[in-house]
Structure formats: C-alpha cells, structure tokens
Length: 220
Ligand code: CA
Image (cartoon, rainbow, N blue to C red):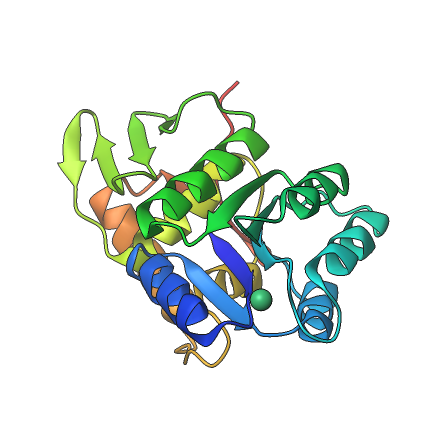
C-alpha cells in the first residue's frame, strides 16, 4: 500500500513514516498543503494521512480540493484533541476517519488497515484468492494452509495484485506502488519480486500479460 503523509510536525512525521515503513508500507511525506496538493495531483496513493493544521494550505482545504476533483482515495485526518469542530468539518468534507493527537502508533496502523479494508469492500482483513491468503494485520501469507515467508516488497506486490484480481498492473505502476520518492529502484526489481513470488506460491499464480504487465487471475 502506498500512502501520502501530510504532516508538518517533524517528530510525528518521522515516527509515523518510520513505523509504517517498518510494516512494509510505502510512505511519501510532505510537510505543507501546497506540497500535498502537488503530490496528489501527480501520483496515485491508496490512502492519505492528512494533518488539518498544515502550513500554506490547511488540511481541510486540501481535502475539499481533493474531493472536488472526484477522488475517492481514503483520507484519515490527524487532529488535535480540542478541535471537535475541525473533526466534524473534516468528516463532512469527505474524510473517512480521524485520529486524535497524540496517538499510539498501533492505533494509527489499525485505523489505516480498517479504512483501506472498507475501501476495498471487505468486512474482514484477510484476503483469500485461489488457495492463497494474505493478512495485512500481521503480514502473514499462506498457501494451501502452509505459511509462506515473503520479503516486505514481495508482500506489498502480492497485496497490490490481490486487491483487484484480474486487473493488470504495468511494471511502472507496481514500481510506483512499491517504492517511495528517493528510493532507488533497480531496473529489473519488479521482475525479480515476481519471479520470487511465483517460486514461493505457484508459477501460474501470477500471469504475465505480454507487453502490458502482471495480474492474478480473476475467479469466476
Ligand atoms: Ca500541524
């Protein structure tokens, strides 16, 4: 999952970015509203963590602009304890949930999972597809009931493919999903991860659509 974190507080920003990266999420961090808008206008994110008190353009303005573009990307707002009004305005402007500062990182991570689960229409955390299960909460993957050990990138790649079985992802879409700004990407990184996933799951589990990209087969 690729997240945009818009937060001007250095300490909170660092802690959230480090924590989420440790869980294998791709996190890009901006520190003001203009930069948030620029990032959202040019890149695709699966979820946005949006501080309301941002310099240059506040979080509420960013949110209203985003929803005005027709974007349905889930937004979790970060607000101060005493700003009930802001939370209401945020939810009314199209935020999906909020978390009050200061927060425990574990709670934030759980809310991120909950919001993205609702977005994908699942009541349950675990994704199941053709004998393979993936649990974003504990990052466990099984095949035919047996645990499969994946690297963080392999997990993220599999998670992307399993979100919408049948949908083809191009190599550059997968790279964008797996790597944040400033992270070096080897030119054949995606192919290597795909190769490893096929070895660990099953060669036919991931299909190569010639000249287009990769997908897992839709079950019908
Ligand atoms: Ca702030």
